[in-house]
Length: 229
Image (cartoon, rainbow, N blue to C red):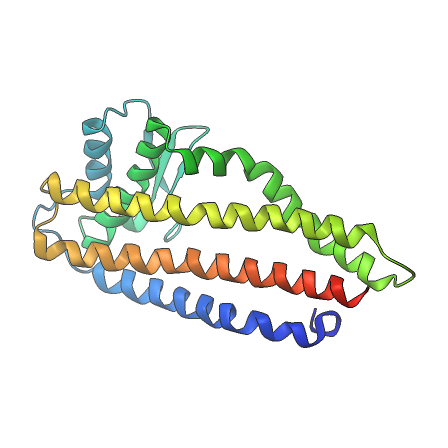
């Protein structure tokens, strides 16, 4: 990619460094607060269930998922999956993560617009992102006149960037909902909320880094396309 990208490769260095930092921050923050138990001692899976119940969400199933930090909410199946280290834990990290995923289920149930828009464009964005670079660089390599393949590649990747941008308000909103629920429901004391907040903030940074990387990759493609004119 460097050989094809030339000087534009430097655009990717800042978001790449941010992504590496974000990954390290998530691991270290989670490791630290996974050892700090909440005074309520309620397992994270029960916290998620109670939050859903209190929000009127009755059709979401909570399951244990294999692996570490594999927690997610599946909107089509309406399943909230918590990783092994989170499901039965009452740590500050587990509480924050479980409440965050419950926040996504509440978003889905309440018709939160950014979430539904993101879900709607996901199939197109996923398909487009897998084809964007191959199409673009095939067009880039064949230099005999303008190539529509480059333009198609840019348009497809632009869809992936839009998806990434929409992910930011969805994640930030889910974290805000989580902290409110943890506080108002009495699951965490005021001085314990800081730990959950730090875990969620570290996780949010990974989405910021991913969006920055996607945006710089799109800019790189546009600059390379311009060099062909």
